[in-house]
Image (cartoon, rainbow, N blue to C red; front, side, top):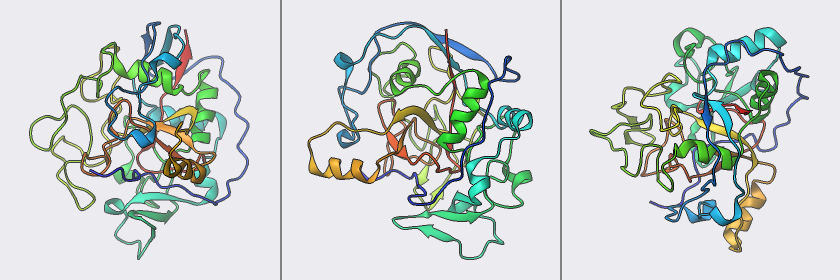
Length: 313
């Protein structure tokens, strides 16, 4: 497998309007369960990087010890995000910009010849796609599920929700520490056994040939409920697969390689995403590993990006 760019499209030079002011809530209605992640000396990256040009190398000696913190057992659900919107009147960036990205399998049949993304043509520019109408106008009833992760939210939207909830987005160090569930330098939250297309489905990823055919052998062709599959050792669900998760950190890769420096130059201002999504497969985007990394512009939204919230203990 080559080190391909991952399937995370961005708006590039599209302009976004100013964010609405969000005032933190004194209480936290319907914020879902959180789990306590114990203090410790975290591992970030891995001694066995698969995509070293993404910055996956082990960085244990460069990371300070963490205190205990609480993190959402799941990514934020549609119902939780709906509470936020109803309480604040918040309007997401996809709604204000007027369009967002939809995977080509899920584009409504009545949308003629939508624009594709150069190089990743399976992503289509769909007018009216947003967190309510995930795949475009009129798709609320067919695609929106209250217990599924909220998607079509940008980094700016995620940060606004976290502020309202009285929390924040996790750092990469916190995210990996929580995702490992106490197991150390392993590939996945459950250990090192790789998911496959036939009989081992510990998370929601692609089965089949990407991007032509997803068999849905794990039970899902798009998102799964936020609390599905087995949780990790700390009680976190769907840490890998299902949806990419926004973090607080900028997308940076320390490297002297000219090709990597050019990659980072093109992605100046991008924010770090962790965990992979239901569109990942080892033959194309093997980034549903704990150490794997991707980035996107902070105003971009897709059908496979969500987030979870951290609370200081």
